[in-house]
Every structure is written in C-alpha cells, then in structure tokens.
Image (cartoon, rainbow, N blue to C red):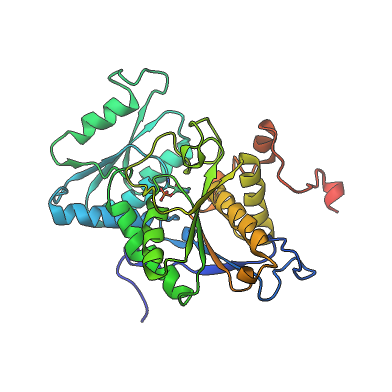
Length: 344
Ligand code: PMP
C-alpha cells in the first residue's frame, strides 16, 4: 500500500515544469515553443504543497526548531500577524502537531482568507485598520499582547533564521538534484527574502557560477524603490528584513504590476498553470532573461529555474477578474467574448 501518515509528509519535492508557450523566444517553433537547445526555463510548482504554497516549507522548519529549542512547549499557542500563505502553512502544521494557532490580521483582509485559516482550526483576531499603530486595538499592539501570553510563541517569519534555512535544506537541494547540477540561473520573488537567500546560498555553494536573480515589484526597496505601493501580493518590501541576505542576488529585475498580472493570466491560459501574481512577476523576469540569453553561446546551455510560490485560486476575484483589472487600468492580455452570440 502506498500512503503517508500525515499531509505534512507531502511538503516539498515539488516538480519542475518546462515553460514553452509563453517565452516568445526568437527562433522558437511556430507554435511558440522554445527553440531546441535554447534557454530551458523550468518552473518549480510550489502550489503542489499540501497547504498550497511554498510557505509550508518554512512553517514546518520554524515549528520543529521551536520545539527543539523549547520555545514552543506541548499545548502551546502559535501567534503570528499574517493572513496569507504563511498562516495556512502554520495552521496546517500546528493542527497536526496539536498546537493552538492565533492569527492577527487587519480588517481589510478578505473574509475568504480568514475562513481558510479557520477551516484548519485556527483562531483569527481581526483588528481595525482605521486606528493609529499606538492604539491598544491596533494590529501591532494586539499581536504583541497575544505573543506575550504564557505558552505563546511567535515564529516571526521576517527574522526567523529557520525561514531561509528551510530553503537551504530543502528547496535548494531539490533544484540542484532535479536539474542534475545543470541549473545556470535561479529566479524568484522576494518578500521576507527567505527563499532567495536560502536557495541562492545553497546553489552558489555547489557552483559559484550560478546566477541568482531577484524579481521585484516596481516601488519595493529590493529594486531601489522607496516602498511606494504596488498591487502584486506577497513580494516586495518597504524595509530590509533580517531574513534577506543582501549578498546573494547578482541582479534584481524590476517588474510592473501590469506585466505581473498580464503574465499571470498568460500562464493560466497558455501553460495551464493557475498561479498567483508573484508567480507571474517572477516568470516574467525569467522570460526576460531567456530572451536576453537566446541566440548567445551562453544561452544554448542555459537552464533557468523560476520558483512559483502559490496558486491562482486565492486571486480569482482580483487578477482573474477582468473588472478588477480594468478598475486599475490593466488589461488581461487577451480578448474576451462578451456575449453568448460571440461565443457561438
Ligand atoms: N510570493 C508569495 C505569494 C508569498 O506569499 C511570498 C512570501 N511572502 C513570496 C512570494 C516571497 O517569498 P519569501 O518570503 O521567501 O521571500
């Protein structure tokens, strides 16, 4: 019989899928596929983790390390101010290991996102957005108060060294083994910076010629911005997190919201990869790189791996909704049939 004892055993070992139809490489096949021998672009599909994102990896490692150090005791409570992918990973691991989980989130977080966390058995405390940070009900004060309770432990993905370490120990070695050491470029987005720092360090230790490339929303500090707002979620920062190793990236490619969203839609429509906006952003940067390398001697042997962090399911009312895109002046990048008559 083939089975695992818990979904936690299914975290990691995600596959690589070749991108072909969306690269638009010069000299590519008539159907838009990549030219033979050209840069090979491989997407690491992190939505196949059981919690639906790359963050399952850090949740497991951060919790295991806290158990080992005694910071998290049996029956303890995990408190983290998050509503996104890290929350799902923590809620899943906490439930399986018998810990309580409390997430603090601002009231602007969608009901759907809160309900995902509750579905796993976590508690969600919602704080008003319209109060000053020093107000006792503010998001910051509430999470600090909860984390100070006896038995509580705050993973803090922005400073926890086990965040980048999980990628150094799992994601990086998987990519090295899956490409049989032939990877030449690694591309990913940066939020906490855990993924790029852990994977990048591991790969450079195997072969210092491997290029590590960050993809970043225009406006974020990683690409020289001032923290000006952008719409793509989960990536880019307005401060420098401790989990980001400033020495690891050889290059950072800035990507606009418009390109991120249009390419996210293309990945779904042409590669059948229903992924999130930060995936479209990273894959757009990988495509740019492939186009630069195409036709050069270096390009023939180039193996570009791009990490796609999560699924498009969490963005159906945003990126995959034409009205939402239009509201911000973005195009879905494709013509739509508006009426039954046009469909038929
Ligand atoms: N994409 C999404 C959707 C994310 O939630 C995150 C994590 N914030 C990232 C990318 C970036 O990953 P990291 O925090 O490891 O830099």
